[in-house]
Amino acid sequence: MEYEKIQKYLDSIVEGVLNYTPKVLAAILILWIGFKVIKRLIKFAQKMVEASGLSPELSSFISTLIDVVLKGLLILAVAGIVGVDTTSFVALLAAMGFAVGMALQGSLSNFASGILILIFKPYKVGDYVDMAGKFGKVMSIQIFNTVIESPGNKTHVIPNAKVLDDAITNISTKGNIRLELTVSMPYSESFEKIKKIILKELDNNPSVLKDPKPEVGIINYDSHYIEVAVWPYVLPEDFWDVQFEVYAQIKKAFHENDVKMAYSEGVELGPIGS
Image (cartoon, one colour):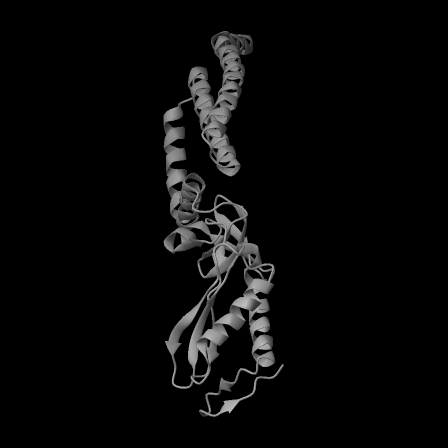
């Protein structure tokens, strides 16, 4: 009886080997050929994506996504050839994908927004932007976040979904930006004199662009003084520095030209210090 059992086990093992060996060998061969073909397809896809002019970040992501999807389909096909029931496996993957999707709703929203930003390019790395309440230079555009550096050397990591939900002001699109400054002058002072002083100071500042020309004009009449708009054009990277410089230049010029100022406490004119 023991001999018959052993013989039966051996026969079943031999039968299993004979039945599954061709399938396993075929699966290995298909897997090897499949990986080779996928590698060539990925290289071709990368060339096509790069030729389309998409950003390097998006090109890399699309290539990786195609690679993962194709290899996953190949492994499922090979598992079916070997004899594995892939129906339950696919159902399990679908259930896991749904659960993960529900858990990562916010991340998926950022992910989708990142794809849209990389495709439509409302801004690019190196641009100066004002978005989501932050102003600064775009340092990197990631799949989930956009990283900008503010003039105070602060790094802001902004979720891409928040970026697209708000208005985006790209300061670098035109190549220059207009500073919108205001200074005040008393009613008794000559506007033409003030305008001449301000334009001279703007002309003396090398960071203020000559084209477009700076604009100086009356913008508002206050109870104690007249508000004068000073609008010079500068390069985006000079935005903050020139703003501080121009204010300092105008104050010094007012002092040197004996321009008086109306203080909010009253209507008497007082001197401007150096």
